[in-house]
Image (tube, rainbow, N blue to C red; front, side, top):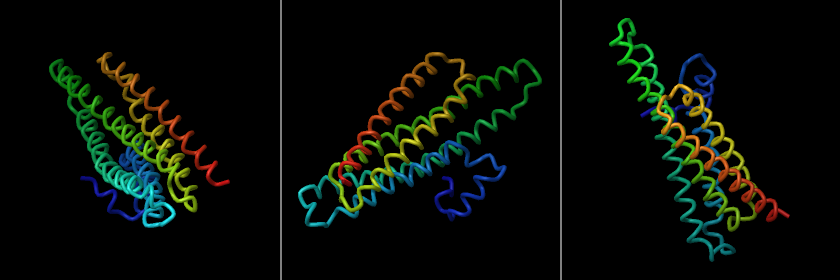
Length: 210
């Protein structure tokens, strides 16, 4: 697994800004998304144990636990995204001097491209789940911290849209059109649903801050 989550924030910034190929856009988006859903967990933790929110404590505990699960899931997906890029580069460097080598390289390249597309798609799916729980929490979380649920909604949607660019860049090179159409259809659904959830969460946050 990648050690990215074990590094200091300063180290992550340094390597992300360097000419090192990873972490790239997919991994950075996932890490940003993890910070977003951390705000969801924080609002949950600031709600649990407060007498005023006793009636919703069970639900808030469930949401908070899911937030921690999503953070852990994103950590694994950062490692998977970095590994997928490494595999792509291995294939890119394969010899192509003969027709046989070219055919083998193209076969492996198509597999690598699909993997490099599937990883950011999985990150997007995970961030959509983060938006789902954030929208839920916006209705019942501690009003004193509810602005941070809005932060979570904005950050998670931004990270979701950002990570999909890491899928988009591969699509023109993929020859399996059935796979491409499936990805494009799911991408549209995810983006639309993410926008709905973000807007609903932010609207509720603004309402409860008045």
